[in-house]
View 1 (cartoon, rainbow, N blue to C red):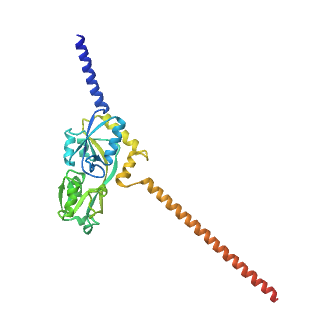
View 2: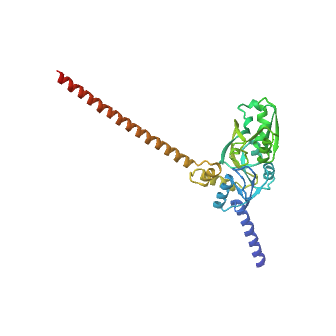
Amino acid sequence: MKKTIVISCIFVLFVFTGLTGKLYGEHLIRVGIYDNPPKVFLDKNQKPAGLFVDLLNHIAKKENLQIDYVFDSWSNHLDNLYHGRIDLLVDVAYTENRAQRFHFNQVPVIESWIQFFTLKQSVITEIRELNNKNIAVLRGSLQHQYLENEFSEQFDIEFNVQEFDNYLESAKAIINGDADFLLADRFFYFSPVKDTLLLPTPVIMNPSSLYFAFNQNTSEVLIHKIDLGLGELKNDPGSVYYKSLNKWFDLDIQNQTQGYLKLILALSIILVILFVLLIIKLYRRLIKKNKELSFRGGHSAIGK
C-alpha cells in the first residue's frame, strides 16, 4: 500500500513538473531558422547567428529557456510551424492570413520593406519598367505573396515570377541573366549573399514589421516572456538589441552621434578662430586709419 502511494506521489510530481515546465517555458523550444543574413543564418562554423539569434539567446538565458535551432528553407519552415514540428519561427512579417495559422508576439523586432535589386545596367526608377521582366523571389515569402496578389492588382503590368529556395540562388540567377530583378526585403542589402554587382533600386513598397511567429499550441506565457524581454532590450540603448544592430548592420548610432558632435565642435572652433581673426584684422585697420587721420590732422595744423 505504501509502495503504491509512493509511486503515485512520484507520478503526480512528475506530471506536475512537466506541466509547470510547459507553462513557464522551462522546456526545449524548437526554433526555426533559415538563410537570410544578417538577420538570421548559419555562420562559417555552421552555428546559428544574426540579429534574431542574438535576441533569442539573450532572452533564453535570462528566462532559463533551452533552445534547439532547426535549420531549413523558409517555405519548409512555414509548414513546420503550422504542423508543430517547430515551436517558433523567426523573422516573420505579420499578415492576416498568417495570423489565422500562427500566433505572433506583440512587440515588433524591427521594421522592414521590400525592394527590387538588379544589375547596375538594369536599375529602374519606375514600376512600369518591370513590364515583361522576370522577377526572382524567395519561395513562400511575403514578397512572393505580394507579387502574386496586391502587386498584380495594383499595377497593370505583365511579369514572370521565378521562385528560389534561398537568396544565394536568386542572386546567382540575376548575375547569370536568368532573371532580371530580385524582390527582397531591405536587409538583403546588408547580406554577404548580395553580390557586389547587385544594386538596390529606388522602387520600394509594402512596409512591414517583423516578429516571432509561434505554433498555435504555444503557451501564452512563453509569448509574453519573449515580448517582455524584447521590450526591455529595445528600451535600453546599451542592450544586446542595439549592440546586435551595430554588429550586423554596421549602424553604430553612438559612434555616429559622437562623430557628428566632434564635427560640429570642430566647425564651431574654426568659426570662432575666423571670427577672432576678422576682429583682429578690423582692429588693425581701425588703428591704421586712426594713425592716418592723426597724421593728416597734424600736417593740416602746421600748414595753418
